[in-house]
Image (cartoon, rainbow, N blue to C red):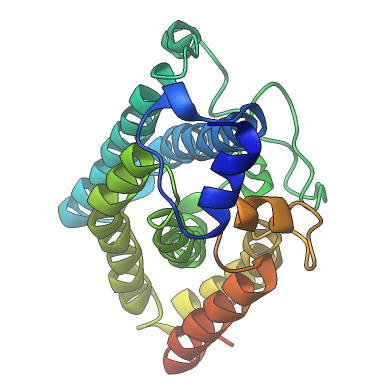
Length: 250
């Protein structure tokens, strides 16, 4: 079977299950998608680890620790799929500055930074518990939407991993919303949360990528994407807008 015939198969909704019959361009795009997810989960885990000690109570500390642990586990699961393509996963066992962040006032848009493939939002530092919770609420909602999209990818072993971790990422977002609801119970907490929303909202939104992305058509043709960036962003805006409105944080 030629590469073109496989691409035609994918365009019509076909699925692949082994690295052996994957076209080169498809392989490159698939590995890019997986690397971005793995690096983002590791950066999120490392960044949020520092927030554990800022948690106001035992339950909050447990919730934060659970998020840190499970995000690292999700990265490991996708990394196992990457290993099937011959990727040298040993480099992930070494020391990498996953917790490294830029200055709070940095403005990098969607640009990648440093030596990894994390989303740009994970280059910004957290400042205290309220800030961490708000970031988790907004980015958690984005993760749920993005993982739902990835759960439909045409490479079945990866789709299965994303479907398995989707409930846990959904729970991370729920934990964030529960924590934020407690924070806004006081006027001081609501004021701090509003400031954090103003900071994180545009940075999380940037993680969906540009509208009318030139790469989307290729990804869609390969069955690696099904909705464009602007559709995912619109869904996130609606979901977070409703929740923030309920808490008077718009």
